[in-house]
Image (cartoon, rainbow, N blue to C red; front, side, top):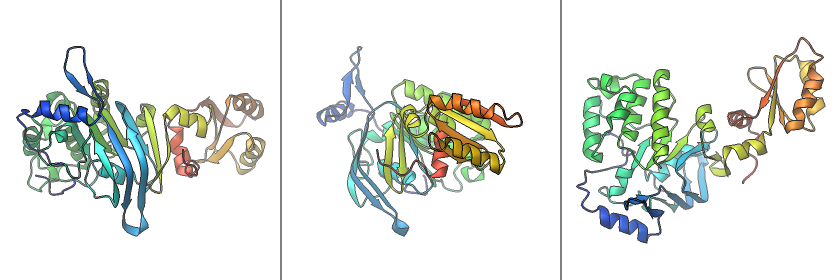
Length: 346
């Protein structure tokens, strides 16, 4: 079994208590509904109330109220140390908060019985979890099947897990370990999926397969909570929750946040000399957001009127390399790096 207590405990189930379990969730006012065929469907839901986690070095996570009730991908964005991982671990019941409560599908995982069937509806990949040095991948998969009652071959094959089965977990490369971690999180088809920087270290050739698994789970009604700085995750998120210094400062659809923090148009200038950059900043500084990237590019963003004004200004400068395009969610990463988006609470 895992050496760390950070992995949620689960046990096999004979499913005999399902009816009472489902009735209990409905009575607790969870998001339950009947499908046309008569089967009970439990919508994914996470509720956070008055959560405070005090950590080392004066860090404090403070989330007064947050309800996550929608299937699909919810991205948690923020600089390193902003509280993303701490919040995900609190949702999973892996850390004890100073005060407050978190419920997943109506259960507080911190106090729920290890045998509670709710754990079979949750899948998680978190930073720092590991396995015994002698544990082989095949043994880890056997534990997974025993705990959850199923391991979908589609997920395992998509992530290339069979070719790793004879290897020990400790003997794998970083990318191979990440594939195993994701397989353990996803192969039992959970209703709530929690992922912390899932593509960090993941082999490029398996990234598309991983995303196809997530798309299938989202289409089936699962909720995917992912802390990430990956552009593709931002582009496919239904909701974005931005943390700064332990607090939620933005919580809305990515398109709405892009419109508010970036605008509709982004203009870039490649390797502008200091004089040209200063002139453009002076020309557009009052009507657009202007910043310079680490790669030397000058970025200007604003409303649709910026496009024509920018083109009229730079077109006569034949030696200048520039581009104009619509704003997109990945532009939020530049705002994050600059710290410009962390000054307000929405």
